[in-house]
Amino acid sequence: MALPAAPLLLTLLLAAAPPAPVSPTDDPVAIIRKSVALERVSESLRANYTWKVLRVNNVPATHSELVEVLPIGDRSYRHLLARNGQPLTGDEAIRAQQIVDDAIAAHNKLSPSERARLASKSRARRSKEREELSHIPDAFDFKIIGEVDINGRPAWQIEAHPKKQYSGPNASIFHNMEGTLWIDKQDYQWVKIEADVLNDISFGWFIAKIAKGTLITFENGRVNDEIWAMKRFSLKASARVVFKKINVNEEQIFSDYRKFQTDSRIVSAEELPPAQP
Image (cartoon, rainbow, N blue to C red):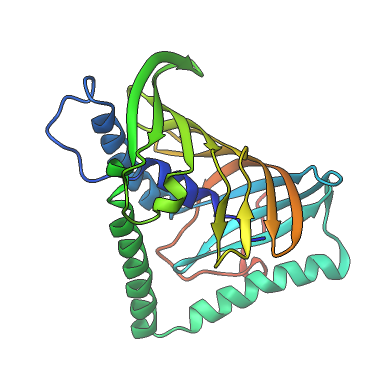
């Protein structure tokens, strides 16, 4: 089953129109709008980063994969590094590296006009997503329920409940989700989100369905005193794909964020200079 990607679910909960001339301390919607505006800045900065993700699936048995996410052109590639705590070896390691090297080679062969076309296509896709999500403030009622310290930093705690009268884009999803958001008071960045699925949600012409009671959690943190980025994502769900029921208990841990040079030709591992002693 293809569940919605973590960044998409996150954006669905947070996206909003540009900041309105309202004091953020008085209006939870204004707080969210400002956080989304700044999140978009962080998103552009994250395009210059690579990071690692440890994905752990506990159903039916514990299984894990460690990947490195590499930005290559306008796409991100997941380079498999280890499985179940053991680094890849032999042919499996060679195949994993070959996938990355092929992507790099294909990108480096693109003409300037082809790269511009792909970049324009990518911008158009993101613009369409932002347009669809601009209706989010109409889909939820937001309420500040307190202020708490998270990792030594004060944050607003805000509840989001669906508006049943909302009939815009993604209404079938928003009507069946609610959650709590924690937003950093200094940087106006989201620190944590907990989302609940209130009723079954269908995707793909009812081929896939996420069941009532699904729990989704995001945790984020500051990286290099420059960006806010994902630190942890967890999903506990019961889902149905066609006629098969699937239970999901998955956790993803994000680490090792590093700057990735995008202003020069991308090179494969074999082209890199040897490490200095």
